[in-house]
Length: 515
Image 1 (cartoon, one colour):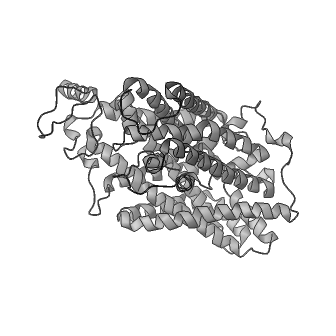
Image 2: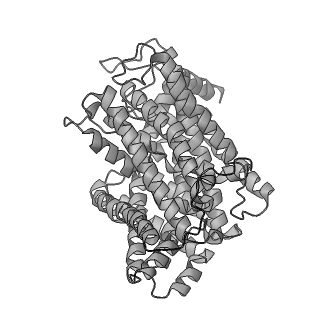
Image 3: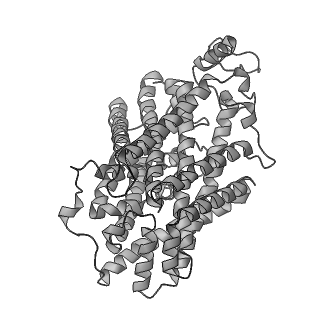
């Protein structure tokens, strides 16, 4: 999981190898909190992983590379959407990105809470504890507020945790999961799923099956983050696509093998639950006389989640503060603490995460809450990707002469094919996410749909209202976010703006005059 708004302050003079960039992308995207829900598909899960990689992951990576090199200013999707469609769309895009991350926090922290539950000495007690909603809620709140406290201490306080936590908590467990799956089959373990070509193609006639498939798109989100390194690759026109292909194949392979390992070991009736990953490790470790390793692995998974949370508490909050200083939020949200961290935004986000986490108490089960949060986060992120793909295509017409060190291959037709493919795939996934999954009980289908649409509408409406009420004096003169092309810019002497009037400032001035 990652964000396209995180930009480096300067280009690194060192060149990144094709394999090196591929590894950066794999680490940025790979997470083990998703495969348990997809294990319910059995062998058919591979179909959806490959489909999403071909029609979503690769288009995202190539399109983001062009946008990043063409508009390298701070802001990411905020910059891209704003240049294409105006400031309102830019603010909407970055707000939705922050909102989906806020919803994603309780989602991934549920995984951490369950992992911590399995660090106990008795498996039976651990299993009961992992299904206790109050325990999950309190764990989510405790870990998130701890992560906020660590992030508030500044970059030096969490960068080392983020680096080693990702290795210990994601890369090593992923390798262990795939290795154990192979060992399970070689040692004569009984597969819990059918291993034939007929089972490789899922039942596409049932619309209920598409809901869980849509969540796979969220597993692949974040590849756009490392598009900022496209110019650091030797011969980027050839090297970057190769790196993306390697990363796509590597990420998909790990997710497919990890998901199939869970499906092979855990009975189908128990797959789809958030604890099925831990059950897989328990069963296979016990088979090979390594039961003592289960608590260690569970603790490592929890550490990996904490490291990711600390990083994402700081990153999106800092990005939103930059947008706030550009005049989109009141000055009170632009303040930083002594460590240079946007403490007020971080506290506001912590309060929002806490409120979302309380939803767990009202869901029929932890699994149902996990699924609804996952679909809502995915829905919002897919809206952001729809905006991104549309922006890339539109900018080919609106700003055709803008220098782009990297371009999607194939000229304008290539952009329509690759960007259009990503747009259509995102739209289909978004539509599928509105269908209640049959594999996991989420209560009334009407309640499920009502929650998704209602919450998504509320979240999308909020930035539009904030944008309409903004004031010209909110902009910090020291803001590092450059105005959009159609907005006024100060001259070199720091005097009055040029004659070019931007839509955003005009609307804000008119709104203030009306008041």
